[in-house]
Amino acid sequence: MKKLIVGNWKMNGSLAANQSLLDALKLAHPKSTDACGVAVCVPAVYLAQAQALLTGSALKWGAQDVSAHEQGAFTGENSGAMLREFGCRYVLVGHSERRQYHGETDAVVATKAQRALACGITPIVCVGESLAQREAGDTMSVVKGQLAAVVHAVGHCITEVVVAYEPVWAIGTGRTASPEQAQEVHRMLRNQLLAACGKASSTPKILYGGSMNASNAAALLSQQDIDGGLIGGASLKAQDFMTIVSAAQYQ
Ligand code: PGA
Image 1 (cartoon, rainbow, N blue to C red):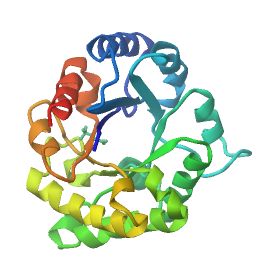
Image 2: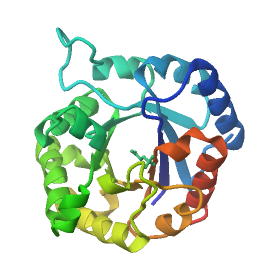
Image 3: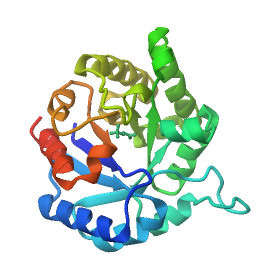
């Protein structure tokens, strides 16, 4: 399966810093390849800048959240239709920071995935267990339940999403899941998606996220069911991000 590497800038950046980062990425990844797709998910206020700089390039861009509502009195939110106008190819939904700091439930995350699909944007559905859940032996049931809510809501459109497994204890901590730990969860997710999709050829990509960096990317990406990465901290440095992209290209 073609790999996909997505940067999640979180709440970082400035017009000047974004320009130099995106210029460097365009230079390093001038052509799209069959081996690996590359995208950056930027803060919503920088979508216009991403659109201006990346249109016509091999890089795609996206947002980090989408409203569960179509339009109306939802101060501060951005609708799927708005994101679409700015050329978003992807949107993160259910990132653990949204679940944790903004109280997003599985049901809200599932509705957001539906909204994105309705607007022609691929939702990157994030799932992952906390440290306490892992230590209690609940990893598989937690992650399975998070994905099941989305499968239930989007039905046959599940083939059009991307899933990202991000153990919460590995995000921004420098503590990565081992390739074997990640593969074990990815395999379970693959089986769950296979059951939902019916045929193997149409199962969504499953990305790994959580302290993936230039030195550990190759080992993670070589696992059978790891189809790419969702990269936070390391996506802010052009060289580190491109090293991860190269690691994905040579799997
Ligand atoms: P990290 O973040 O790579 O900085 O751990 C990943 C993410 O939150 O998507």
